[in-house]
Image 1 (tube, rainbow, N blue to C red):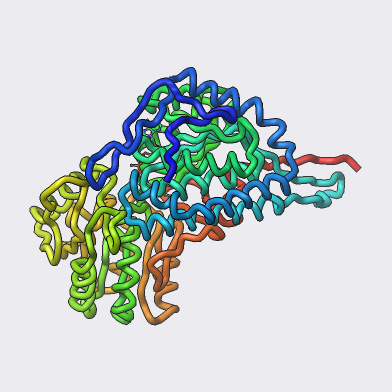
Image 2: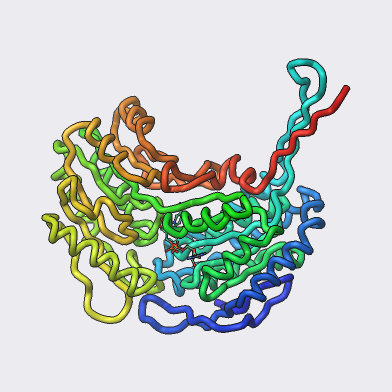
Length: 474
Ligand code: NAD
């Protein structure tokens, strides 16, 4: 596993202007000292992206697509070493890390295909006085900011469409997990991305340099994935120059089990929806609304499955639940559980911070009342609070009583009933009888405070394209 710890600007690796330690959360050891960028170096990245913008936009879509396709192939060929980097800096178990690398690589494959399918229109105006031409052009320099929980996939979900569309980019990974992003950029470099098209910065502190970039008129687009709080702050920053934004923000996913559900299937789906990434996913099931008739069976099944998970360092053979990304994050999870218990919640399994080093938290199942405050928080960890519901209507009402609306899960053996619930969900995505639906070929994104815009699918590339209408006299 070769670790790259330099930044990448204008086609060259640079030592940066400072260093930041990157930790292995399973034992707190330092994996690497990654380069950081001061304001001048961040602006050098904008200069580089600007210098490369015209020729990249003019590069044939087929050529852009073939570079992305090569990057996909390199990622798949190097899945093991990339997964190890993810596990080392993020903590997720190796099986999750491998799945993430494959999912991440698929964004390069999908957008290599989308690069050559950008559509347009040529039609007669209704009045007959002119022709309407609609074409698409790259929006321009795009700032891409990613979180620590999917350090590979969140980067490729932005780099793929940006490069396919013909935009040059500045990528700012999370300070906790920059090494995966640097390894992916190394792959893009080897796949043939020209100098200046992809640049990586890591400003510390983050806010002031990002604000500077968002006030540079050459920058035209911000694609952000992270918390709603930081996303809202960046929307305000981007407002000054009316920079286009797409926002993939926090979630608080309801997981609804109706009284006719196949309970065994619901438990295995719940284990995926809850425990992928150790619960640190924006799509992670966060509130379980379970019909009274099946609640006991579901809670017992879920508790047994959670209690049976092997908690260990992500690299250890057979590990199923690794540490959180940091002790700070782990302590947030523990505090949420403690206050849920103080608020009347009962522990079915887990709930106690283990002794020893490392940011570990046990897989935990709680039964809580529908007004327990834990249901209002994105837990981002291996904790499943279960609430008993009396009817489909109550499930819908409780599920929608949230400022978030990223994804919902519904289990029922009656597809008509499940679809009725799905249509009532105030969320951008609904999974029916499945624990995971993320797919590069489908539009990913949220309603309400969970975001703006969609990534992946046919929409993803349009986040990086301007639509231009040309009216022609005939
Ligand atoms: P975060 O908002 O703290 O950080 C996200 C990124 O923003 C990081 O790169 C961080 O360094 C940067 N950042 C922080 N403060 C900034 C500032 N003032 N200016 C500019 N950039 C700043 O989020 P996180 O803790 O890394 O990630 C967890 C959050 O991300 C959760 O809320 C999760 O739901 C969300 N998330 C959403 C999706 C989605 O697709 N909707 C996917 C993954 C994660």
